[in-house]
Image 1 (tube, rainbow, N blue to C red):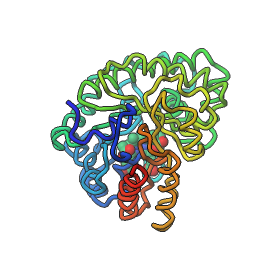
Image 2: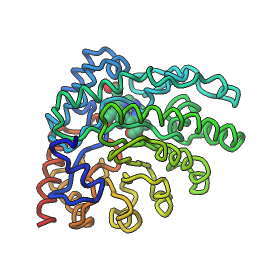
Image 3: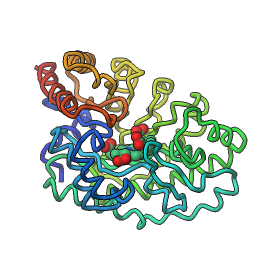
Length: 348
Ligand code: CP3
């Protein structure tokens, strides 16, 4: 059954809409004091995302505070990796750090088979959100893309140059492809669990693929995404494919066969529309840094994006990347209100 407000789903399918739907990447995060209170209660980020009750609360905060048109569940792209034997923790100020990063092709053989039941709590969070919100707005499930997850597994933490990942990829291309394929198979089960649990859409986050050359992107990062999208069991649920740095791949990215492409601000929204629409819908693409500027500037940038897209359906307003912890909730709320107000005007 469709949620009561299905603007987001209609835009994903290029069906008629009254105004542009809006939600924001990393909308469930530290910039909200209510989030910081829940995190304090949980004790650590990991305990937080595994605690179904608290994770449901965190997921729905942006509905209460910002009144966005879709909820992304509160979780992380790394959550399924524990099941295959990758141990990590989130270090204060540093982000995720792995105990046992992959250093050689032999390490890949030591990975455990994925047991989807280990991620049951993620399905419970989706069910909990739908229950708590009484199906008011759509719920988005998500996963990291194989390349981005493989990069975390090899680097062992965040990186500026992906030296270890690329060295592995060039020295052992076949083993690297096998690793990507293991991750793709894991994500098929993981995303199918989310869809079965009631996710109305799923987003695949390829935050780091933009560091690859177009040739290497085609050879390594794209095939496992095509495999995932092909193997999802869905009735109506759209797949959103987010690639940070998509500008270099914009001429062929649509071969992943997603329903929606989430684009960052390095590509002009008019160019994204020209290349991707109407075969697919487009999500994006405000530079999140605009939120540090004053309200007039925010309004001007929102207006540019909405005017550039025009009256057609097929656009979901979002940022080009996530909200940052030091952003001002009041301005984030202003952004959401402004998108709603101006998109009515553009369409009238
Ligand atoms: O968008 C949402 O609000 C939903 C929840 C969500 C989180 N992470 C919560 C989170 C989503 C969709 C993610 C995705 C994610 N996680 C990505 C892909 C998107 C992107 O931003 O490129 C990546 C690369 C990660 C990995 C990750 N998780 C990092 C690098 C960090 C540390 C960041 C930092 O500043 O400490 C996390 C932790 C994380 N994930 C937090 C949240 C709210 C902060 C945890 C905390 O300390 O409370």
